[in-house]
Length: 77
Image: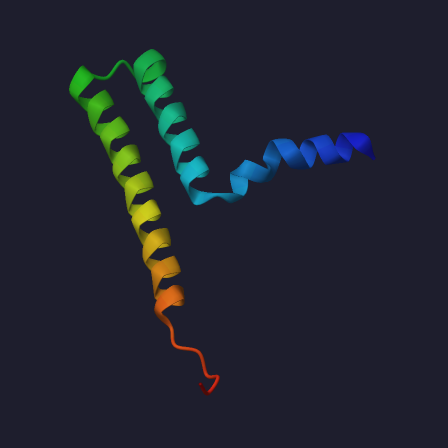
């Protein structure tokens, strides 16, 4: 059972959308650099898109958390 705990620890970060986008961005960038032979501009575009997606997800997460914090409670004062 100890190996199952280690597997969960390894794959737990993959539940995060930011980690999945970062991993996909890096994989596509490596594939483009070494397999597809694309130009430097395309590489920068791929990496910029990944960064923009990660920042957008972070902004969305922060907005959701602040909306929950501002929600009034139903308890009388």
